[in-house]
Amino acid sequence: MIVVTGATGSVGRALVALLPRDEVLAVVRRPADLDCPHAPGDFERPESIAAHLSPGDRLFLNSSLWPGVADAHRAVIDLAREAGVAQVVTVSVRHARPGGRLGQDPHGRIDEHLRASGLPHAILRPGGFMQNLLTEVRDGRFHGSYGAARVNYVDIRDVAGAAAALLTRPIGPSATYPLTGPEAFTHDEIAAAITAATGRPVAYADLPVPAMTAHLTAQGMPEDVAAQLAVMMREMETEDWASATTAVEDLTGRPPRSLADFLADHAHAFDA
Ligand SMILES: NC(=O)c1ccc[n+]([C@@H]2O[C@H](COP(=O)([O-])OP(=O)(O)OC[C@H]3O[C@@H](n4cnc5c(N)ncnc54)[C@H](OP(=O)(O)O)[C@@H]3O)[C@@H](O)[C@H]2O)c1
View (cartoon, protein in one colour):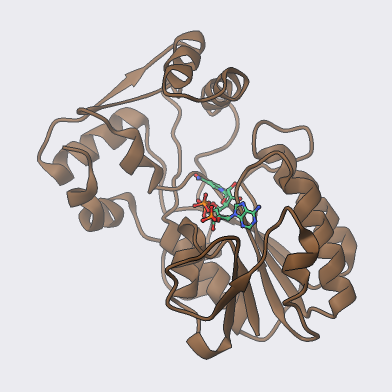
C-alpha cells in the first residue's frame, strides 16, 4: 500500500491523482472530498498516522509548515521504521538546513532525522511553486523583495510526478532530489510573462525589506514570519535559487513544465 499524508493539499492532491487507486490509502485529519480510499489520522497524534502503516508499505510523508511539524514528522518516521515501512518519500524545500529560514529549518531537521533513520528514503527539495503566483497577483500587481534575483519556480504537478515515480518504481538507493523548473526569471520577467499569457497588465513591485514585511503583515501574516520571508526574498540575490536540475526529467522521463506551460494552463485562474 502507498500511504499518502497531506493528500488534501496542493502536492498531495496532484499525487493521489497519479497513483493506482487500488494501491493508495490517504490519511486525512478531517472529512475529505478525495476520490481515493482514505482514513482518519492527524500529525498532532503521530500514532494515529502510524496506525495505518504495515510492513512493506511506502509512505508519502508530507503536511505543511506548522509549529509542531518537525517533531510530528520525526515521530512518524520512528513509528514507520517500527512498523516495517519499506520506503519514505518526503517533500522538503530547496536549501533546507537546521537553523535556516522559515521552512528550511523544520524541513532540514526532518530530513536529517530521515537520513539517520536507516529507512530507505527519497527527499524531494523543490524551489518555490509556480502555483504560488496564482494567489500573489492581486489587482494587476504582485510584490516582493527579490530585486534582480533570478528565481527558478517548479510546477506542483512535477513535484507530484517525481513523488509518484519514486513511490511506484522499485525502491532504489536513498537520495535527495532538488526539484526545479527548466529556467529562472527575474520577477519583472515573470510579470511580463503573466501579462502576455492573460492579456491583462501585471506589474511586479519591488519593495525594500521593511516595506515588504509591512505589506505581508497587513495581509495577516505574523510579523516575525513576514520579516523572515522578506529577508529570504532579498537573500535570493546571493543564494542559488536560479540553477536548474535534471531531477524532474530523471525521475519522470519528461522535462519539467516551463513557466510558459504553467501560464498557458492557468491563465484563466489569475485574479481579474
Ligand atoms: N509553497 C511552496 O512554494 C513550497 C516550496 C517548497 C516546498 N514546499 C513544501 O511543500 C510541502 C507541501 O506543500 P503544499 O503546498 O502541498 O501544502 P498544503 O497545500 O498546505 O497542504 C498541506 C497538507 O497537509 C495536511 N496537514 C497539515 N497539518 C496536518 C496535520 N496536523 N495532520 C494531518 N494533515 C495535516 C493538510 O490537511 P488539511 O487539508 O486538513 O489542512 C493538507 O493536506 C510543505 O512541506 C511545504 O513546506 C512548499
